[in-house]
Length: 263
Ligand SMILES: [Zn+2]
Ligand SMILES: [Zn+2]
Image 1 (cartoon, rainbow, N blue to C red):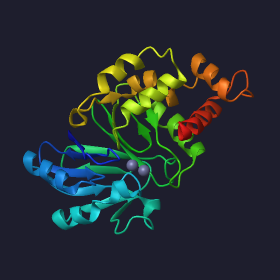
Image 2: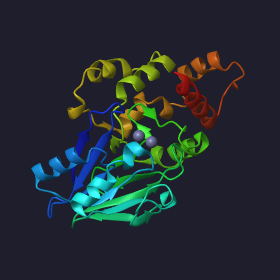
Image 3: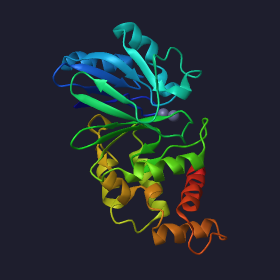
C-alpha cells in the first residue's frame, strides 16, 4: 500500500490522502477537497484515481467530489447513512465492509459516529495497520460534535474501536491540528511526559512533511486516550468540583470534550 498525504494549505488545514496499489497504480482519494493537488500528486506518481471516499458529510471533506468525479469518473464511497447529505454516493458503507484498491490493498470500513453520525474511518489490512480517521481522531485530539455529532457516541467510538487497535497503527487524520491540540494536552496534564518535547518538534513543522503518529504515541499525548491519568483527573476536578473521586472513563472523556469546546 502506498500513501500520499496531501496538505491543502487552506484555513482549515485539511489533509487529503491518496492510497494506491503498488502493482496496478489504482488509487483511492480520501476527502479530496483540493482536487487539483490530488490530481497533480496522482499524475506525478503515475496513479489512476478510481475511487473517492468521504469520511463524513462536512463540506471541507466533500467539496472536491464533483470536480474529482468529472476529472476521473471515480466511484464515490461514503457512510450509508450519508446518502441524504452527500450527493451522488455510488457505494454506501457499513461497518466491516472491505474496500479494494487495485490488486493488493484492502481497507476495512469502521463505523465511527461522534463527530457526525455518519462517519467512517478506514483501517488498512497491512502488516503495519494504518487508520484514516477523518475528523474522529486527530493527532493529540478528538473531533468536535458541533456539526451533527454527539459526544457520547464519540466516546463510544474511541473506547470500543480506536483504543483497541494495535499500538503500531499509523494515524492519518483529516486535519493538521497537532500543535494546538498538544497545547490543550499540556493545559490538561501539565506533567505529561512526552508532549513538551513533541510540541517543540511539531510547532514549526512543514505540514507538507507532517509527523505521522501511531496509536501508541497518541496514547501518550492525546488527552482523550488518557482518561485514567491522575493529573488529568485532578485538573478536571478544578473545573468540575463535583467530579466523583474515581470518575469513570466516559465521564472524564465527556468533560474533556466539553472543556475543549471553549478552550
Ligand atoms: Zn468534519
Ligand atoms: Zn474537517
